[in-house]
Length: 219
Length: 219
DNA sequence: CCCATTCCGTTGGAATTCCAACATACTTGT
DNA sequence: ACAAGTATGTTGGAATTCCAACGGAATGGG
Image: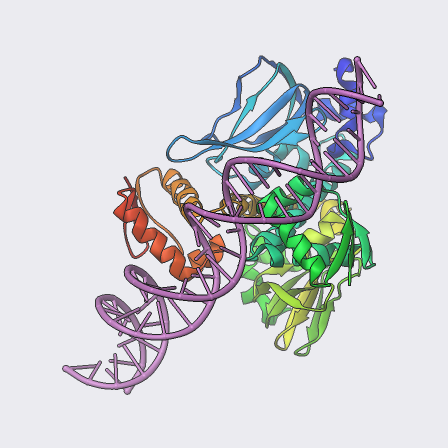
């Protein structure tokens, strides 16, 4: 486990937990590390899982196959990040996704039930872990809700204005910068990059905003 | 509190908790009921909240105001349902939404920190509560992710096929029914109802599926 | 400095969606 | 059975987006 200390320290599920507590914590949770070769199935859709994973080294993909067998990539998880926690915590009988390794990987698995049930030793970090987990899932929840707000608008113009006006409000100023380049913003809002660029220019011509690179100002 | 027993029994956060345990549970959590008049602000955007609400009677709206002051309704919460739990659990400094009552309402507030910290009396329901909360938020998470998968497709046809093919897979059969009428499905997929109807007909003519009301079959 | 690459804005035609309007079931209440 | 209301399918023109292609600006090596 020592080899993975660097990775473990970057896991946000463990944030606020002292490095010296990590070892007892992991044994208390009876966490297990498993090594996978490239291209292995970690979880298969249809399974029921009560544990979730943390990538210590390597990379995994969360993928979804539709009725016709077309596979789409939902997420790419690198070292220090976790996967499957929502499915484990939701206790659903059949997970709708599969998880596969894209490289040789070391994965840490944690049983989510062990988190919520305080152990006999009254470990102090149990509460912290649960709070961290709630934090992580809730933050994701908020981000997803926000994104749906934007992508549910019908036109590119509406999507842009919805997104930019929330960013302005978040920044507390009419001048603000966004964390995306054009292609990323287009993907985020689910529109064409070039059409979005054109619409940005039109918004500028209509006197609604100005921009330079990822610096924007609403007028 | 007794007046609200019927409502409390429908709260899914309390599912699996015995009715006789509700009273001690609520006092252990130092939960408080507050009465609101119609049109009151329960939470205001910009605040920081460490407690979330449960509607015992009446109704509240979760709303978001953009930079220009346009208000959009994110959610409508009736008796037995909760609001704000993601914001409380995410511990964000400024919530991006406001919550207002649309009718006279009785709201129950619970401090989310009291949930995660076991009390001195070792209440048995603490674990259950935390698991329920994780469950609820995770399920919402999964539902939101799924919806984004569909709405991120570019064309109505792609959205329909993505949605229907996942429903077919979920049902484990090429024949299945969906929980939406046409207008609801259109709203869910963020497209026009009439355009969607037309596209459904085209998909039928193209031999990809058949349907009758909310009964579908993929071919 | 030059070359390759990436990012961004622009443009025009094809494809798609929106929108309003209308027709036809199907439902519901009386 | 009838009327009113709701849900769904259809259609045509307007508006929007997609898509491919291109050019210029900015960036990063070598």
